[in-house]
Length: 263
Image 1 (cartoon, rainbow, N blue to C red):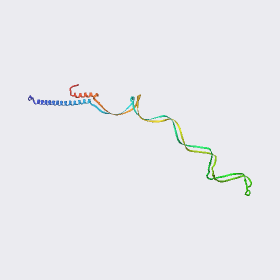
Image 2: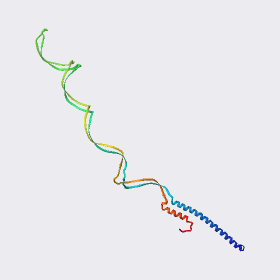
Image 3: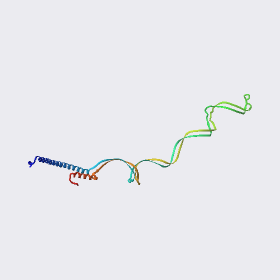
Image 4: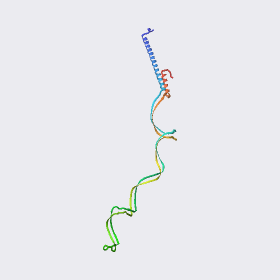
């Protein structure tokens, strides 16, 4: 049959055969590519399914200042450390006995008269200046020829003015009134023995360092700014989010991408 064909027809048949073989080669290559694409799309679909059940794990750092202006109610008792000084006054009444000696400065003016009635002894000789007149009125015997004579009255005044050196061998009585005008400045010990009444309000300072339990009967207003510095670990399961549905749809779409179906 092929012998009856002319040369042109033979060339056409050869070209058709080559075209047919080329088509079969292309189809085989396409089938191989399709098979490889289906495998890779299957792997991508399975990967999307795995992604749908994965967890997003991260760390969130928070460094903020939160303003707080509200009323809070504290129901439980709180233990509070107390470190303070309490100032107060207490009444104090007492009778304080005092028994002591005090050195008291004195300044006393003494102006008086002192009577002296005593005896004194003068051991040393004393120079006495005598300036006086001795009255003379007496009778004197005048001896005549060494014998007794008549008594002759004598009357007159004898002036005496000279210095006498006199010594006293006996005690002398002294009777006199002596004027005293003195200023006494001294320090004298004075004994004190007495009871002093005391009625005072005494200020006291009491340091208190302790722990106390307190409770609050009413809400407490709070106006503050709270600094927050946190490092928060975040673990988000994608299976519990809406993204899981879309991941699964994308997985099904990838696996059915080579199928001739519009579902």
